[in-house]
Length: 276
Image (tube, rainbow, N blue to C red; front, side, top):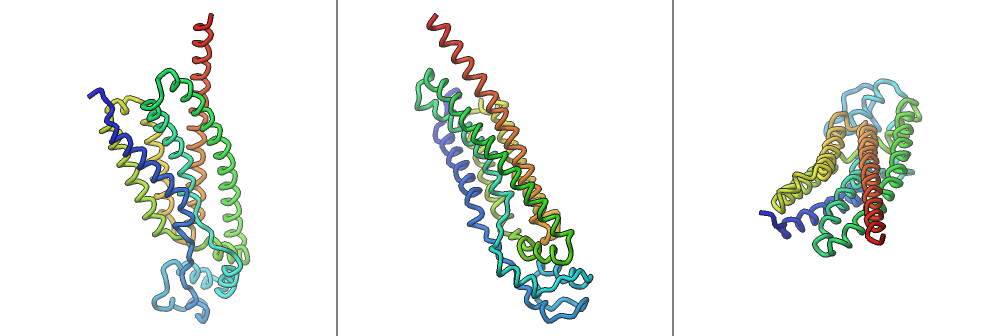
């Protein structure tokens, strides 16, 4: 029972690699194809929605009915001038999951590298990875905050700001995002099971367990925010989810950075003692 079951550990690593690849590639996998709302062009204000109108077009119909000055022709014209805008929440998950993958990969490196060398390499690799994650996370956080402010400002600036928001961010591929988040959660849960099967002592590593739970929490938060509002506002809550995930990633990057510095200092002290 004290031996590491390598096949299960390798399977956990592969599952996490797949999760990170899906997260990074999600903007390509989930194109923002807006629904066909052309049936609204000939409708009169406040008349019943045309039969067969996509559900995502109902908020636009309501906006026209309430006299916000939003014209369907203007929305379609603005859409043609702006490329589709994918969500941010799912790609941002790679910030947390990348740190989890790095931690597990360094544990797996102990199977190939001698223990004396591994102790030095682990601290240095963790230091580099945490610094990269910290700098990346700061940039992503400010990008998400800036986008959120832009979207909220446009929504509140009727009618022309509302037209721009509806055209660029008003239609979110919520079904595709839900399927992707479900797949990611399956990968992560399966990776957790494989880790327990590989060695029960992984459960005793509090840092690893908390980082793994943070990954699951981030996944659940993005999924919850996607489903809590009407489709027209999902882009806004998606940006909120991206901000939350970025903050979680920054917290873990700082913790790993501190741990790496402590590890490096200990190695240097031992080296001094050995050479004294």
